[in-house]
Length: 353
Image (cartoon, rainbow, N blue to C red; front, side, top):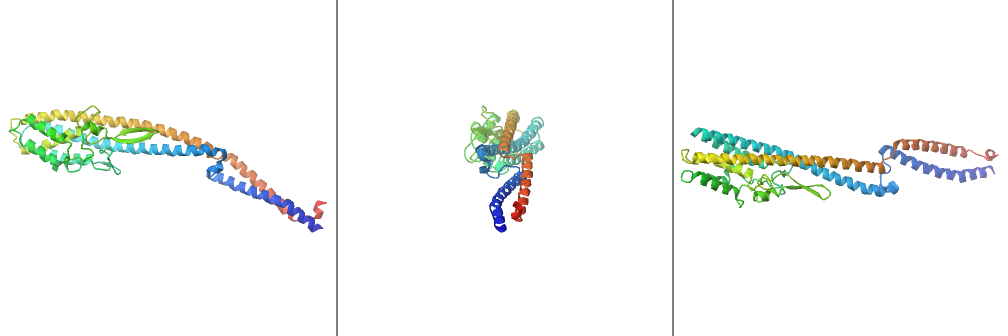
């Protein structure tokens, strides 16, 4: 009789307690996981009614992150481009100084020194125009996987053609030499020192700048192309003109320093360099405007990302203070259940009387 009552008490009621303990154990594990990870659930299904909002917020955060990455890459490219352009401007300044010396002191020594410096500057200019940021050529525009300068400027076909034109100084007027060399440098046909992608007119090259997606249906043009004009309305390319002027000076040894039109040639180059310097300054200013615009966009994206992340946190993040209390309560309930089960194992008929 005693065994029957004990079996009934323990077998019926304790089975319910065991089921309760199992549920409490699962709750304990879930709460401990929340406490350790800081989120309500490792899966969207565990978020209950909030999962729809979480599912909408996560892709939005990922998209903003992608836009932010695009902006950062564009900013890095612009910084590299601005540095290279500054060095190109230094080449232009050195050439202007060299022309000033030639205009005031015409000797074999000054001509030789200027020609040698210009030849060296051509190599430097070509290297600068082939500057890379990561795997991309910063002066190549949209075709940034192809080097914009396809050959050594100082030994290119264009340099040879300009040298031949300069060698005619004396039998041909300075104005004709300047005009011929300008036409040669402006030629966009195959065989020029630039790649096919950028061998185009200055205004067309201006439109070939790299396109960057920085927001929802928002794309901006950044960087610059080696052969572009200084502004959208200009019809000349400062870098093409600088290249041509360097090639002319590098070819001065092929002409007679006593030629009657020599001083006119130098004067024409000096006038051209004023335009080149102004154009390079405009290009640098354009890069600065792009940098400022991207900085503003980066700030907006950062704020957007922060707001979306906060919203997602409100949906997914656990309230740790509340979770801690719940863990304590659950542990207490489990301890009480274990004690009760242990006591019931030893109960007899006398325990009920």
